[in-house]
Structures are given as C-alpha cells and as structure tokens.
Length: 526
Image (cartoon, rainbow, N blue to C red; front, top):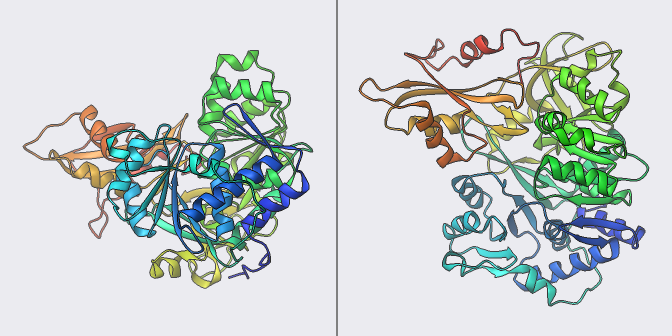
C-alpha cells in the first residue's frame, strides 16, 4: 500500500489545536442556541479532556459514543484524540443488538451516551457489559441508568488548561464499523495519519467557498463528520442540527447564511418537493455536497435548476475515510449531462484504477472493480486478517464496486459485487435482515435485495417463502424486522413466493431476483 505516514508528524488533536490557535476570536460552532468561538471551543475540549482523564481514560483506551449531533460530541472527539484514546461511533439508528456486538468486538471500556433521546437504548447496551464505564451527556434519570455519570457536569467542574497531545500519529484513532456480507459488521481501523490525510484531501478535492458556514444535519458519526475538521482548518463555522427536518434545515440556511451543506440524495429530494423551499432564501448556499448513495440524474438537474451550480458529489467508503472520488461543481454541466451519472474522478492524493480479477487495469470503457491506493486507506479490519488480506490484495483497496471509466476519467458505477444495499444514504446488509426474517416461525426461506426507488435510491425488499403449514402477512413480517433491526434495515415491502431461484451451488440467486426490478435501469445500483 501507499505509505500512510505522509502526514506522520500530525495527529487529529493537532488539527483542532491548529485551528484554535489561528482563529481564536472567530465563531467555530453553533448548536442548540449555543455559540462557541474557537477559543471557547478549545476551553471546552480542555475541560472534557481533563474529565475523561479523571475517569481513567488514557492512551490506547477504547471508547464508544452513541449520540445525536451536539457540540459535546465534537468536544469529546477532540478530547479523545488528545488523550491518545480510540473512538468507535455507534450509529444513532442502530439496534441494541448491533451496538452490543460492537461493544464486545471493539473491546470498548468506556461508553458515552446522549441522555437526550438515547438513554434507554444506550443503557440497555451498557447492561450487557457490566465492567464497562458508562458516562452521559446530561443527567440520565431512571432506575435503569443509575450507573451512569453525567460527563457534561463533570467537565464543567474543571478549569480550562493548555491542551497537550498525548497521542502519536501512528496510534489507532478510530475503529469505525461497516457491515459485511457475512452478516456481522467489520471494524475498519484508521490511524491518525489517515484521517489527517483525509482532511487535506477534502480541502483540495471538494469545492469550498471563501467563508465556510457549514450545516450538518445528518449524523456526524458518519459522512457529515468529515466536513467538520476541514471547516475548522478554514476558520469557518459548523452549525449542528440534531437531525434532518426540512423546515428547520431551510430556515437555518436562510437565518445563518449557510454556505456549505451535506445531504444524502433522498434529503435533497425532500427539499425539492417541500412547499417551504419556494418561500426560503437559499441564495447564500455556495456548496452542497451529496453522497452516500447515487443520485438520480433527473432529480440532480432539477436541483441544479433550483439551487444553482452549487453541487459537488462525494464518493468513497469507510475504508478510505469516505473520500475517494468527487464530481466537482465544474463537472455539473446541464449542457454535458453524461457525467451527472458518474461518481466523478479521483480526489487529489488518491490513486484509483479499474482492475480485473488479476489486478490488471481494464481498458477505458470496460467494466472492472474500483480499487484505491491512498494515504487515507485503512490499516486493517479489526481482528479479521483473512478479510483484510482479501480487501487489500495486491496492494490495492478493493471496494467491491464494479464500474467503468470513460475517456475523460469519469467513473460510472454499474453494479455492486457485494450484496450491500444503500438506502437513503445508509448501508443495509441483506444477510442480517434475512436472518431475522427466517427467525420468524412462519418463514421457510428469505432473500433480501435492493430495488429501485425514486426517493431512497434503493428500497429494501424481502422475498419470502412461507412454511407450508403457516401464514403471515406483509405487515407482520415488516414489524418483526423493525423490532429486531430498527427502521433503516426494515424492508419497505415483502413479496411472497412459492420458491426462490437458486444458483448451481444451491444458493439463492440474487442476480436473478434483482434482474426483474433493475432490467430497465441505466445503473445496476440505486
């Protein structure tokens, strides 16, 4: 692989300190009516660093966070970097079972839970690991949360002190979990070096305005979080919303003169279809990043007509810190619409090739697998040496996305070699949903696929074969999955079949199942 020590003298903590030192009097962060200058943000990071250290968190310790977007989550992320601890985010929409798996697999010793909305789920997770330290943002009342300590109150008791970086650039900074076709999430290991590299790549690979006032409404535990440190490096302001609400999102753009946004395509569709858009001044918006799922070229052209030439597409995956390719604003040309169906061209610092199974580059226009070499590439999959070796085979990171590259270097994803479904910007892994469906007493066999959907990009569909002596209806099975896996992984529809097509090896033939729904689509992903 490419040497990941390109930026080895710098840590994530140093990125925060650099911004704080350069722009002390500028506004850094706005959240829930509270506004922080860079100096004030540095003081909060210092207090949370001291509070965590007082509770025994130090270099190499494993910490997980389950939280909505809030200022304290940013402060703690920076504090953990300064302490040399590693962070694993828990998806706000994930199930208790999913979180429990990550807690055990990542060997988490400290869990931090947002008491505002996540207390019940978070402390259900904590009860499965009685030796784990549990802290909360805000007081967590109730008999089930008696073991939690209010980290925010603890931090408030400390006086600000100079920030000292106890980490090393080659330390593990994050273990971020992504799903897999085996049915269990995989921990993607990143050092400080890969994240620092990704921030610099973002500054050069995305379109940034002169004044960055960045609005984050999707979870900062995932793609939206990638915009925060680059905004700070520019001396800009990050505005955090707890979640995406179209009225609130539009009102914030108008009120705060937002210049940078990030949304998944389905959210852009919601804005386009919302009556408030016509009455809202969005003229301040200069950059709208979109990604995490393919966007309909038709709706993209509609968005360009409404918002102007502000769109930049981001393509990547957790293994390359979500930064692989970008479709720049200059590439969003209504008079040259073909690139609108692409995922762009490699971002600066990334080497991208379309390779065949023998690691040979395929001719332009032919289909192969998108593969990366980059300083922001993962170290490994946590405790999964065989899967690490397969993914990093031949010195390339293999994405599993099948694509072609045209003469101008634009990359067009045409299929996905893995079964993963991308719905509304979130990843769903069919095996996990299939396991839940087949656990229902009425279900004999089940296959889960993604089908085209104008709103979600892909919608989760379950194809079910019932037991001969049993009955179940669609609503019952949908409710069954939702209870076990949460709303994101729940099928939008259930189709009942007499039998499933199978391959020569006796496995359900997903390709045949998908074909009837995708045969008229230009791209074989959402």
